[in-house]
Length: 310
Ligand SMILES: [Zn+2]
Image (cartoon, rainbow, N blue to C red; front, side, top):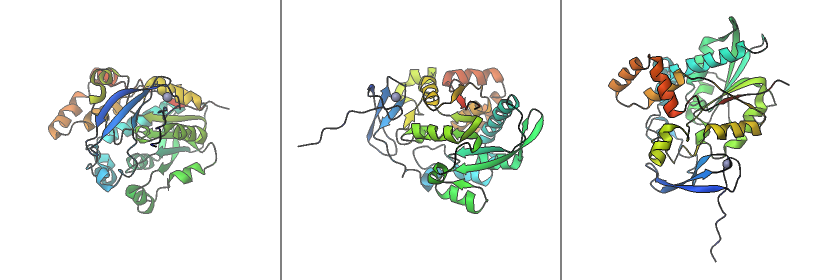
């Protein structure tokens, strides 16, 4: 007798109120992947989960499911990559947030969860400080990741890089900022990661999280044909409601931010042709265009979060 398959439940909130949104064939793993959406929290997730083995050195070279990945350039010289736009934007948002917070002279402890090739860690440690209320507050960085670049960052560059077990073993209230930049969509079960971030944030801390939006005008129009929907790696796509729900579940307060450089980087990254990238870099100096793209892709619509003061 064949075993009866368990009915699917939401991988984010556990609700059984899930329905099929169709399927899509992987381009790297050539099989059909089902897309299931949760009526309770709005999470859209891929079944089956393709596993984490896909994140190997070929993936880091852009030879995996995501051709836009380029860890080698970022590791070698993060200043020469367009990602600098994203880093500057994140630092700006943190500066604005902590400038409005109660004054503290202690170092600002920043964890970059899923630090990849370490561009943000290098950017922050080169700056040494963050401008908070016109004063320079020292920054201490920690990275989390696994794989060959995590090893290099630890051994060659001297960064404090922790794997997931080491992060889980940390006591509460370790960090003022935790960044999860284009990470959460890769994780099979996102809820424990947000729970961990909520536990590790200090009261008054800031969670900076960016990820795709399954409820933006572009995604609604394109459906599963959306090129962000890469079933082997983007295994769960959120929307603003879903993020607000998961934050509140773990005692965090949704925090609206208005991105600029993050939007610019997303656009430039998606253009493969160098000429198009050059044109985009010029066009994106025009703020109304950035705002228009932001609205179309729902980038700033996706909230970050803060941890309430005790
Ligand atoms: Zn759900």
